[in-house]
Length: 454
Length: 80
Image 1 (cartoon, rainbow over the protein chains, first blue to last red):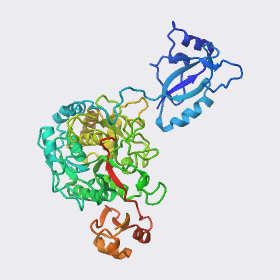
Image 2: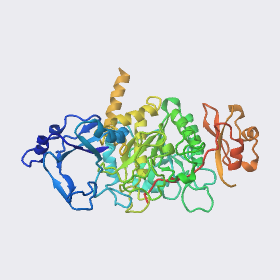
Image 3: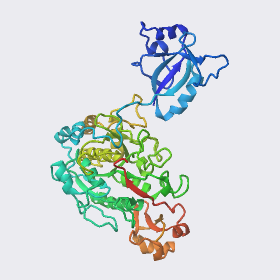
Image 4: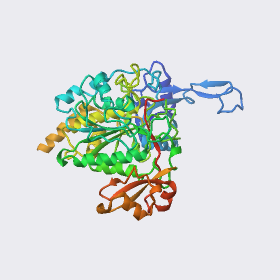
């Protein structure tokens, strides 16, 4: 997390910082602060001391006349730095008491006038995403999704819509698809909705992947108008996907599972800490089957969710730590969202996760003009879009690197290591390890291939 | 069928049928979502899931086997 550190160095240093004709630097103010990566590009700022104008005034109240002193003996200095998210609150509390000159440490939140939120217009197009994912480079290297099963667990896919808007043929593998009991319709022929958007977005990076249509979000509940499913439908779907995986030859196993769904409210669940809870319990049957499917060789991706602090979805009801249940499972890639400018969208959920602290894992692109599943002017948005975009990248990689050559765990580690870091301290709770970076990933795979050959 | 929950049970592969699971757990047909069936969670453990009524879940779930919540799930988008 980014922080501002208020220090009171010697008066001559304060005077140098305050002098308009001298260009004092952070290094002039402080050499080193434990656990803080100082931002040396930030010119230190002198801060006047405020005190009540009238004798006996409340020193902490702003509701009174104040006088400000820039006298070197009284003023202080602000520098900027970054603290690891893992220990942010502890460092902020301890630094003032333990390090000489430090008066206080404050959060330095991102301020933007154009943060991308739910109602914002599209930022770029799917062709921009294609460029950012370096799809021509992927294709030239033989990474196009051929032979890879790409399961879209959602509201069902409309293949005709995807074909029309993507401008190329789409393969839906009806035989390996799974329609839950009570849901009518055929794989690839469901109404255009959220699942069609997800399918479109997977195919940006993996145009030749075979889509496995898994419409678990088509409600099996009677009388409701909300499009949702039950977690038990997801349990059954993942059991089916295990049979799909087991039927593949061991040497060429390649199954990528994209999940742009989750649970918005703790009200439908048992409370955390109570046996039988889903959001916080690795022992829940769905969290068990997620681990089992991954262990067998599937790459499982979940959207981090749309409960980011800056502009969260109004359905978000968890009081904190909104990346819950399998969306925070240690054996999945939890995907946050950035726009095509590489800036985190304000609704992308922040970590830590509930089953595993270090969530989201990485970010991918969202909020672009793409499938038009919700109308001509409506972007493919939410971490709902970021997740299948990333799943497409994983499917593309699997074209040449089946699970027998690179386990899902190894691929996740590689994606962590090669992500474009958006902070200066590695992992953070906004971007995870950073934005998934195709070029760095391909370079790492080339090095790995050379090592394996040697 | 009112509120439903999930429970888990370990079964040897040769006896992994819904009927056998119901017999072992002492469950009646009116207490089980038979359309849901018996779902394999972890082949390496021989661990299966069933969907049963809340009352039945509380009564028959083996130690560590539930009952577990079965919450609704929703698409994460578009953001509202």
